[in-house]
Image (cartoon, rainbow, N blue to C red; front, side):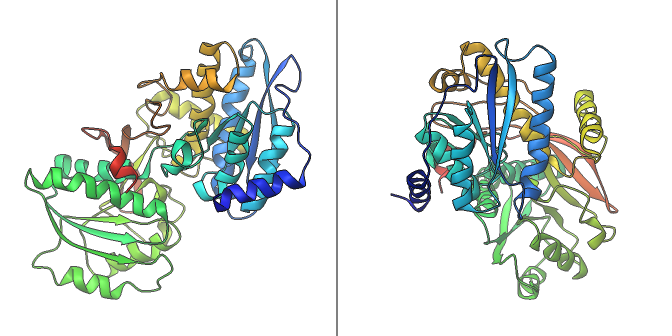
Length: 397
């Protein structure tokens, strides 16, 4: 039994739980076992707010299977053990769908509770392949796009669209997400090398490192500055690393994953230029899809603030694809809904197509918008879909 399974088992042993199919005959229940307090709230809350917008839209249009969607919530308190209890709590309130935190480690205890109850779980925006079949079970999905897709997308886009030939790989070893970005980059690089690209060096650092001076020295000792640095990192350490690279006079393109999308940190690196990230939708008022601009305005009207990053969007997608599957199945029965989700191939959504299969409940290929930060201002400069899906062996690396 895994550690997370033991958490769920302990919670089950301490609580008397029944799992009613529905709260009543007139409602369908979505349960949010997510963080309403603690550090994970910053990740969970925006995506959850987007999910609630889609729920409101569905209810206003007559509901789902002729029934209104009812929302129930339980706070995980950004704690794994509390996450298991939160999952059990929303199940006890009749949840047909259990929505869990935007991270595999913190969302999996609630997702395992849902799996044990035979219900579908959706991670708000987890980007590890474990947040699904591989780590939870056949009823578990994620609403976001796998981290390796981000690394592969940025490498191929930089080579094909920007003419980058010499790449340097710089990995922050702190999280599985960071490693996943570089895993995707590693999978793509041999394909690009066959076309003339070259990996000129690689190094690692830790997110909490106050200085990456040694790594910078090794980059500067190269015969020439690399065309692009694949920086596989996330907040908060990303800011320090980017700032140090630029302060050292390294002007290479910096490629990163979606985890550093957002303008909230850019004041720490004044006039940042030649910095690129992939996003599912733009929060900067320049998304080419007018429906995304409309969503951003709705989000601001509902919450009082603009979306903070692209991680708002998967919450909306999650409810959208689950509701479509329920309508097509004609029921909320988990196995029937899973079967419909697994039939989705390039299913249109507001934030790009979605595909699920019996082997993978994630996205291993999708259309990304590319956001460039130039003179401290981010904006969309194009879009890219990798030439082929990232294979399972690269996802499980």
